[in-house]
Image 1: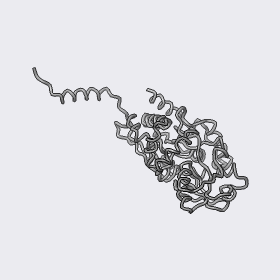
Image 2 (image 1 turned 60 degrees about the horizontal axis):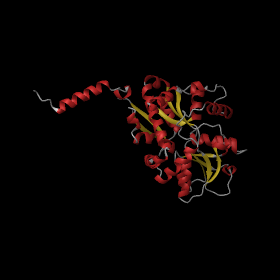
Image 3 (image 1 turned 90 degrees about the horizontal axis):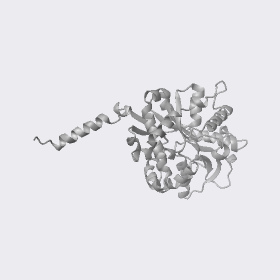
Image 4 (image 1 turned 90 degrees about the vertical axis):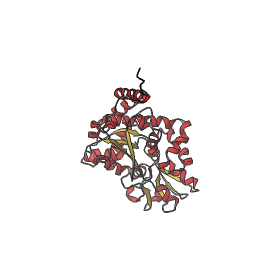
Length: 337
């Protein structure tokens, strides 16, 4: 009898396994999916990306993903439109404006419905009207914080508009500027508030988007329509990984790991962990739906038409053009398997 080498036997088993294993076209073709995380350092909304990366969920679903920070969600969306990257997390209002005004060939495939944006000051006894003529920290003019400021002032501070304040572009460093005393007013996230107050700065909340515009919509994950058509399987797998990451974040026993995974956002672990529950309380990273609520997005579209975000001579984008729900539906089916 001829004794077979164990190495040869193992090689044969491996070859047979590879022959029957499903091959992801994106991986087989060596295509990397670049996803933009808005802000330098990235805003806390990007935590879901880092959880999917560090907990091995992108790898599990067979996609090669690079997370790339951009100054703002507006800059990231322009990179998607230009075809330089595959996916960005960008303001819903910006996407609506881009498609309505310029016919941008992009579409939303997942969203974060509720925003935690608020207009705040480090000075006591101030009101929103005291921001008149003052510098107000935003990410960039036309960016997510800037859009939120426009909405809050228009709906919650009679007599004051965004044209009456001086927007100061600071990417995701508005809280740091207020902590250093460079600004009295800024558009903040909840994690910014936690950071300021842990450093001994009292935060006086003047307005919130959720109260001044309860039918608002916050962020969307956007992709080019042609790239989605060419490589749809890879996008579905990315969304499957993000769906699993959202499920992971919603489980309290994982919050220490989530806080650790959020390190690229620049937050102290204690601040990151303290921010998770308040965000989940407003269904920040949706699990049971795609976060692309028709009523909210259509209401936001009408607000943008009324306030001039959509040009007077342009038709507002329809919901069915704005959203491709099929990617999320297929991703959820994949995670359930």
